[in-house]
Amino acid sequence: MKLLVFYPYAPWPLDRGTNQRTFHLLKALALHHEVDFVALIDKSEGMEGLDAKKAVFGEFCHEVEFIPFEHPPWQKLFPSRLLNPLPANVQHWQKPHITAAINQRLTPGRYDLVQFVDLVLVPYVLPHISHTPYVVDRSRVDLQFQLMVYQTQQLSLGERLLKWEGFAKLLSYEKKMARTTKLEVVCGPDDEVFVHKHISKSAPVMVVANGVDLDYFQPGSAPDPRAELSTVIFCGAMDYKPNTDALEWFFESIHSRLLMLIPDVCILIVGKNPINEVKAYAARPGVTVTGSVPDVRPYYRQVWLQMVPLRIGGGTRLKIVESLAIGTPVVSTTIGAQGLDLVHNENILPADTSDTFAAEIARALTDHALRHSIENAGIATANQRFGWPAIGAQLPARYTSLLSPSTIHSS
Image (cartoon, rainbow, N blue to C red; front, side):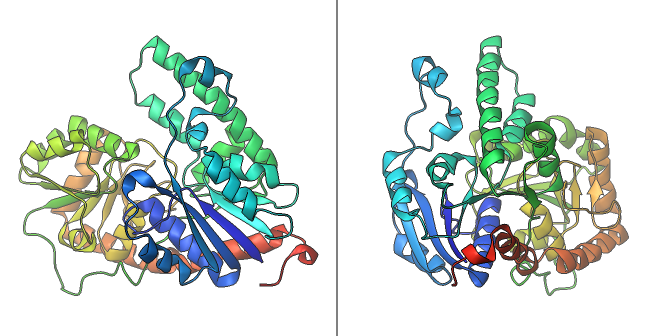
């Protein structure tokens, strides 16, 4: 098959969960099909090093094209936003020069299928469905994500009305995509349930769980490389709402309870682009905020466990499968671990209230045998179920099955 794969960013370096997922799935597709890769490059992040970045994808893609991009201004409420049927977040990704570039590529007969990432790119591809069908890979289900964020916010009546105006448009657009796509690829069963319950019962959905690079995330070679003091890590992009919300809940409702149980516990917050609220946690005793680090593996190996106090679900959960692979036990909310099919007290410790979350962290920190058992089970689980090659191989076969053999170009 000949595929056009279109991303709203170039997933390199692999310094956040969405980059890891989209990079490895792209690579898996390119192993089985001829892939032309097109990505938007945000001008605000700088244009240096594009040749080196392009070379990374050129190793396995047939053609690579980067399109410089900057977001247009957010539309004013009246008249632009209210009269525009596009959801505001989708409109925020629309530019005429990108339309022209995609139109030039998506000529009849050039590609068997186009795969793109996330709802915001639908308007570029939709005009071509009469001759080139499309698949959307969803790093998160937009409506589900925005509703979850909404539930964590305290808003005025006017702000709530504006949000619901956006939700109504987003639901309409989600339904339109469900009617026109060949397949929606989602990260977990909870995403699939949401789509079928709230968007379309008949939407074609495939769950492709997150994976991990098992060659990269390997356990440490030392028999006990852990820090001397009880140390708990929280890892992820620190400008991403689910992560910042998780830390807000932890420090408002869990940290003080944990200190009563383990007074000398250390909290290590590791991840790029910490917002000011995250940086402020470093003022608390025993709390370190690193910001971006060149390699997260030494931090995983030195800590005693990872906490995942997520209250906003959907999308990627790379931090958990990375922890499993490298041998770092995990305490997580049910939402945080959705879709991974992990077993309580075997390869994960789940907790959903402030009291139980603090208690489960304390139990794991004080029970060496429990930590060691979960560590070994996690490594075995990751090796059996979460390697990227096995996970990624599901997509090429499914894409071939979507099309009639007589319509597929030979690669």
